[in-house]
Length: 350
Image (tube, rainbow, N blue to C red; front, side):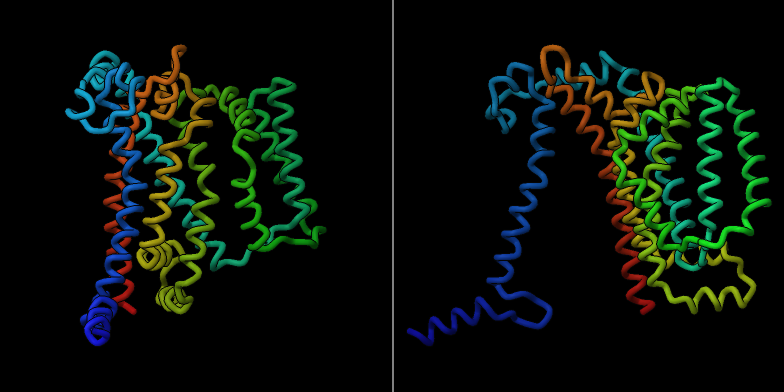
C-alpha cells in the first residue's frame, strides 16, 4: 500500500520531462492564474453587464447574469450614442488625438533625453541655473503683474539671460552633474499636479490657448516626460558602449546612433514605456478639468459628468467606460506583440 501511495505521489509531484511541470505544480499554478484572472476581469464584466441595465435594475441589484437575473436593455447605449451623438463623439476623438500625440512626443523627447544623460556628461553651472530661475520669475512678474505683452517680456528675459551668461558664467565654479539633473527631473513627478495646475492655467490663459488640443498635448507631454526619462535611461544603460563607439568611428552621428542602434535594441522597454504613458494620458482628469471646457473635453471629464444631481448614473458611466477601454486594449495587444518580438530578437542576438 505504501508502495502504491509512493508511486501515486511520485506521479503527481514529478514532471514527465524537463520541459513540463508536474501535475501538482500545474494544478497549483493554474488555480492561482484562474483566481487572479477572475479578480482582474470581473470589474470589466460588471461594467459591461451594467451598461445593459435600466436604472431600476441597477438600484434593485445586484444582478450579474443577463436573461437570467435581468432582461438586458439598450437604453443606456441609445442615450450615449444616439441621443447625445456628437457630444459623445467629440470627447472620444479628443482623447484619441491628445493621448496619442502627447504619448509619441513624450516618448521620443524623453528617450533622447535619457540617451543624452546616459552617454554625455553634463556640468551646468549652478550660478547660471540660479540666474535663469531669477530671470524666469522676472518675466512672469512683467507679464502677470505689470501687464506687459508676453512676447515682449519673453524677449527681454532671453536677452537678459544671454548677457548674464556671457558676463558672469566664467566666475561660477560649482557645477551640477547628471545625477542632479535626473533628481530634478523625477522631482517634477514627486510634486502633486494640483500644485502646478494653477500656474499652468494662468499661462495658457495669458496665451489664449485654454480649451485647445495644443494646451493639453503640451501639458500631458511635460507631465509624463520624467517617467520616460527614468525608465528609458535604465534600458539604454544596459546597451554596450562599444556599439556606439564603433558606429561613431564609422562616421555615424549621435542622432543616427540613437535612431538606428539604441531605439531598436531597447524596443521592449520602449514599448512598455509607451504603454504606460498612453494609459496615464488617456486617464488624465485633473489637468483636463482645468485646461478644457467644451472643445477639448476628454472622456474622463464626460464620465465624471454623469454624476448628476440624482446621484451617479452608473448605466451611462458603464457605457462610456466600456468604450474607453477598447482603444487601450487594442494598443496593449499591439504593443505586447512588439515587446515579445523585441525579447525574442534580443535572445537570438545574445
